[in-house]
Amino acid sequence: MFSRTLTVIAVMTMAFALLSGSMSWAQDKQVPKVDNFLILFDASGSMKFSYKDTDQEKAKLAQKAMLTMNRAIPELGYQSGLFAIVSDFEEVQGVTQYDSQAFGEAIEELSLPDRIFGLSTPLAEGMQQIESHLSDMSGSTAVILVTDGEENRGGSPVQVAKDLYVKHDICFHVLSYAQSDSQKETLDRIVSLKDCSEKITGQEAQSETALKWFVHEVFYDTETAEKDDDGDGVINSKDNCPGTPSGVQVNAAGCAVDSDNDGVPDYKDRCPNTEKTLEVNSKGCPIKGRMELNVLFATDKAKIKPGHYEDLDQVARILKENPEASILIEGHTDNIGPEEYNMRLSKQRAESVKDYLTQNYDVNPQRLDTKGYGESRPIADNDTKAGRQENRRVVIEITSIPQKE
Image (cartoon, rainbow, N blue to C red; front, side):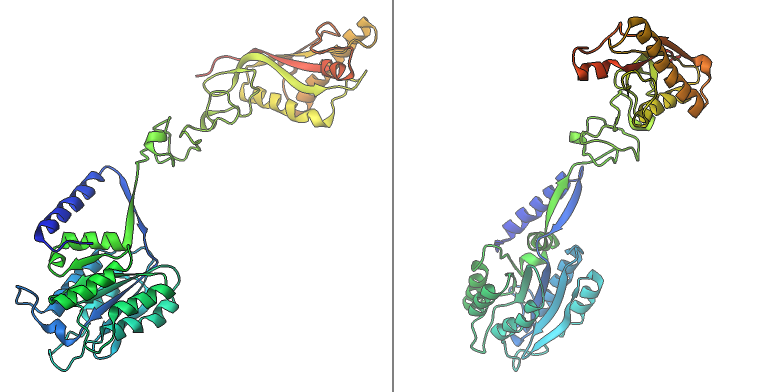
């Protein structure tokens, strides 16, 4: 709740200024505290009295304060309404999507009291009248009473507030122009009903900074988000790779994605999906190395199964990206059958891979050497069926790729 002293106004002014200044380095995001708000303006005769030590009418000061407050309310999708309490309840602007300009025009069109006597003060009845509007709104609602707290029809504003709290998700806030002890007590009791309530006095409301603070407390929270200088969606404090080019896909650490884990990010990688065992250059293409291809053969067969074409397609891509590259295709067998026969079979398997690459991708045969090793280089146990299957394989060795920078 706001203090009623000018000293506190000064403190609030300094605090708000420090808050704003401290956030100048960051991006501030305003998050609404409520879904709706209603302003209930007391336009009864008592509001025509001059306020405290000023020569200005309370109603005119209140109108000026509401206009200043309206300029500080962010447009965050609120539903809003403006109502006046005179002898009867008046709908100045029905509940609609909040628009700062339209709402300000509605405030300027408020009918201010033209006399003191003859205009009753039905504050409790006016508060009760907003219930039909509350019933039509979803979410939480801030109800701002702009009043001096006078009630002369006999109703109890405090009891009405209690009843509305039971039925609706609301919170009453007060812009107070109370002067008598009974007026102050009425408004203080309303504010004390719920912790969410805020109050600002008419004296404090003459400070634009104090009104901005009131708006901040009632309408929205401010979240401070760290900067993301390279615009990759990862804030600076968590970005391990600052300066990533715009549009590049990054991981949670802010580093460019490297799908094949070859040390070259995708946006620079001219040879995507490179076999992990291969050394690559700065463009992600293999320099030299061996590829243990998943090209396996049936017993006593040299024919490539369609399921292994994808691995051979990868070899073709490497050759296409590196026209000066040469490869050695090694064929291997298990130990079933005579050693001399297995030597021929391994050579046939290597030739099958060579034929696939030359026939399907028009690779120059001179770039492809073949060699059969028979059963001499097993990589698994030939005493098991699974081991023998692993040994019936082809291995590709990249023998020359010039370094490309």
